[in-house]
Image (tube, rainbow, N blue to C red; front, side, top):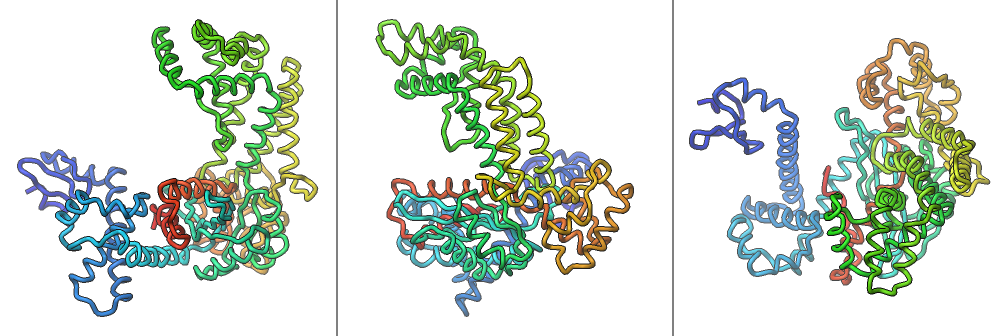
Length: 564
């Protein structure tokens, strides 16, 4: 009876228990209030939203297939839709389609997916259904990006296992999510280039934007690493096409270069890090003995982190771990040397007992966490355009203050000074700097879009208008900016900037659009780096024969498996 008191079949009874139809979990049915409270929980709302999106997606798929296939019976459309969804699901999970040729799996799916009848073989699915799944995906992606007021373009290039030049181009739509203000990147194309230079990159980017019907005037940023050809692509061509955009180089890459200053300065610690890595990777059985050693000494069983060049912060994590277990290392490697004449083990043991290593590790424990925290923050997908300028300035100040501290080792002082110098050159935006941020003044201007800054920082309207290209020829937005700056006491500065500007749109319609577009500019190109990691997962050793056309489809369906 309780289930009938709620609309839309929100609950259903099974035996003497009441279940939420969305979450499929039992709820307390003795009181109606308990059921109502369940409907208000974040978990239920999240699952309900996901279910609605899934049903909407299925309906769109059937409409798309109906348009593509013409007059077909409902049963034929249902079968087509199911097979396309099956292919899309396998691609999104990065499961090879030839898995469906497994007899047991085919039998199971055919028994439980009555609407699709006999499942075609993998070759048929690749030839006939993968393109359909991809076309529906592209159509949905076009619709999503078409509804966004602006788009940031992120791109990067790599060389894959087949020695092909791969250019991944991603789009980040304007963030207007009040509950979760994060930036979501969607892969637009995985492009195979014959050569890599500013012309081929510019040409590929423009063709992709045309294919997705994205106007150049809606592009808010061109986000890349600091490669020379990327800078030239912006300076010599794209700058004159993306008239509202700015060129952003990756802040996370810069902070990783700052980390490398510490690696090169702390050479003795680096010797220890490399020596311990070699000791454990050369002898896998040693890992088990080390865990047993820690267990016998009442320590938590942990293996040393393995520093990897392409994994940011991994060297710092390894060094800090070694600082904590230095005494245990000395005892462990002394035991390991019994009956062994290995010179590398002897070197590792001696490094663990070295006073120089101990003092350097102590300094790293003091200073490394701050740099690691900054790198972790700026490799995330959080909205940070309004924060990065101030955060980097504070980090420079912190580095310079402690570089002058008399109690520091010489290597620490050098690392602090070099880190501050690299950051300062980066933020200067000067063309003479080897690694620079061309959007430095843009990010300084973006501080104005955080209302909490207005009471503590004076940001002239002229500076904002000069460095945010959206204001060009928009006199109404300029007037709204003057009004916004004139009454800081009336603003709700406690809100997240994205939430503030979504709510302020009725009052400042033009300015709110510019503010949201600027806040949605990513400060890093990490999305492109992650897309290459996923690309490597698709083109693994047992799938090297994938055709380049299919490879792009697989890669996009895998990368964009959420949010579309």
